[in-house]
Image 1 (cartoon, one colour):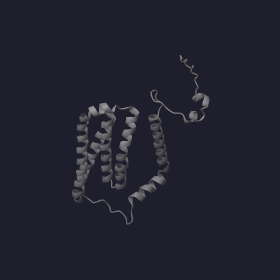
Image 2: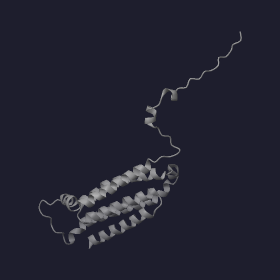
Image 3: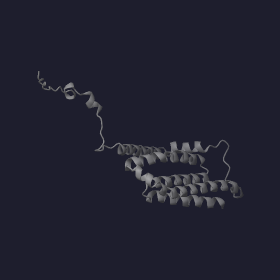
Length: 200
């Protein structure tokens, strides 16, 4: 019973946070809702006894949210002066996300203390490793989908880099090849100035 309540709580928060990531227009608020959705998904993985996936989700994806935010700021050319002016408008969203994360942590802790009253899951065999089983599944049965996902992520990284390093009209660029091929006549010009006549 307790695990069902915790699961539905995490699922509801995850769906709500995912919808807010898609619907909000502010990139800062979208990043905060994305952090909350990652924490909620990690809680669901913990309920499924997939501790490795939960830890990787928090360490990798929550840590990479700042990189995602950096790419968004670079691609959208966000004006930092206007962001500083509206800094106080982000406080309600940040408080909401922080309170929900604390509630999820409390749910996990309460589920650990109160979960003993429910039926215990079947015990794993001796020497069982969740990480080893996951690795065998990924690199044997799901090797091709894993490689396809890796290629999609590689294309996304290349596209993000290409978008952030696009040519802009107001920016000056240097061409090292043209600088190496330059000749003296193109860089040095000797101007003959008429000599001034001095009166005796």
